[in-house]
Figure 1 (cartoon, rainbow, N blue to C red):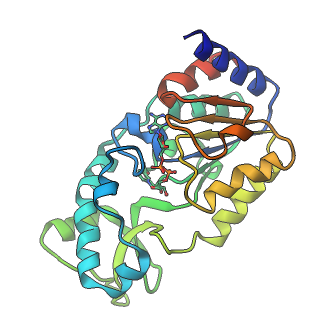
Figure 2: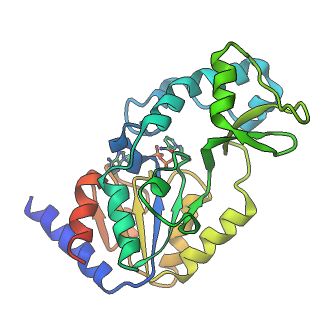
Amino acid sequence: MLILQQQIEDAAELMQHAQRIAVLTGAGISTESGIPDFRSPGSRWQQHPPVSYHAFITDAQARQQYWQTRRDLSVQVSTACPNAAHYALAALENIQRLAGIITQNFDGLHQDAGHQPARVIELHGTARAAACTLCGKRSSMNELQMRIDAGEIDPCCTACGGYLKAATILFGQKVPDAALKQAKELASNCDLFLVIGSSLKVTPASTLPHLALRREVPLIIINLQPTSIDQLADVVIHHKAGEILPRIVARL
Ligand code: NAD
């Protein structure tokens, strides 16, 4: 307990001196909101590997598997509320210390916590909208979900006939250039980099802390399990973000 207290104080001390904090969040920040992550031990993802973009486009069975997996996830995402970690980051924005958030999450909970939308870069898109894989047209995810729930097996775009899916990035699908450019700029201009709830196993997000480290900017990691760059961080806290982050931000 004494060690944890010291880690919280060390993190707060570093953040006291920072004015442009960049935050990278992953699925772990939303587990306390009831949305499971993909890589924690025992996660559903380990039994049902995700459908790749290539499989989605080329294989009707893969699309059905995608919609089956989404059934539970959609309910979890649409009923989830921000938790104490999301609100602590919003408080960081309110005291004008936050340069921006780069999130790998598609759940929209950072925006729900009260951030200005422009401060949140969604690297992997959003599950709150649907997108056509052919013409790119965005549409309502609720309407698409209703079509699926009503029994439609392989929903297609009403404008061009392309396959529809959530406006998120599947494995093998490119992160949009504009979002990645913005994320790199944030990581290259911050004066502190904070990672929360990410295993840092997914590129290009996992490369972003290095842009900050290269400039000898302090790095803080809050993640339940160790990551491959823990040894490069100034402070590492292996604990629940919702319990730790509010205690750090309260000290600023
Ligand atoms: P990940 O699943 O690879 O890793 C999550 C990490 O969070 C794990 O290392 C785990 O130890 C940690 N963690 C879990 N609960 C935590 C908590 N309460 N506090 C602190 N740490 C906690 O997540 P990732 O690196 O973000 O990559 C997974 C991919 O899956 C991402 O691309 C993301 O798009 C997607 N995803 C998103 C959501 C969401 O939007 N909420 C949910 C699941 C998966």
